[in-house]
Image (cartoon, rainbow, N blue to C red; front, side):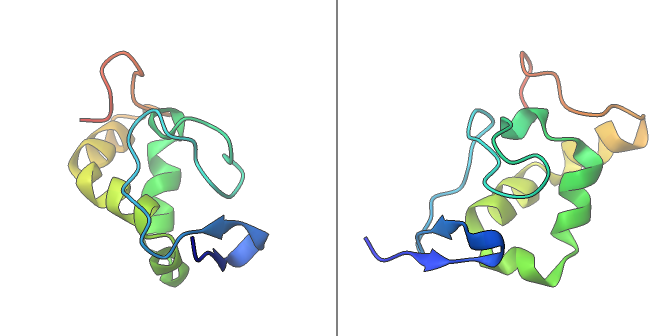
Length: 87
């Protein structure tokens, strides 16, 4: 499979599938943490970064869950309850 080396030296296939709640964050200070446990504020922050287009699976996850992430961020939760999922 063809892979690209992305910012930070990580590799991701160009046709990556969207992530789900149990997938691991592939980069950044929350690398290796389940997506559902990554703080909402962090995910919303990276959504506004130009380089997020290099991470289509992460971008798709955030956009799919954006309403829930905004709600949890606005009430001060650090992350979504893993038992309930991000949506």
